[in-house]
Amino acid sequence: MKDVLPASRSGFDGPATYRIDVQGRIPARWCERLEGMTVAVYAPEAGPLVSTLLGELSDQAALAGVLNTLYELHLPVLSVQRLSGR
Image (cartoon, rainbow, N blue to C red):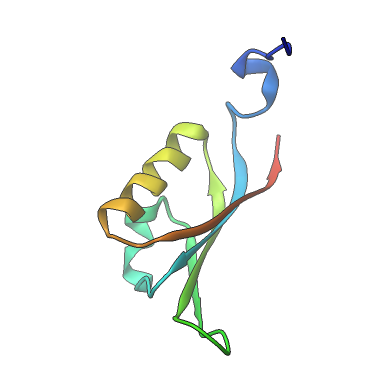
């Protein structure tokens, strides 16, 4: 069985920068509702619009809140990347 680090030692209980890609358009006015993450929308050559959220979240609970909001808005999550953390 693998050893599991307690949350306080794993680095996931503090601030980290995330990039979240979702299918569809997220209006910039929703930034506040999405923990202040910046929103960029682009149109790939093939397929529907993709919105990218980028920003620092305070902890995993904040990330879960953003993902729950996207779920409530019926926006399919394409990817979640943790870019950096403390």
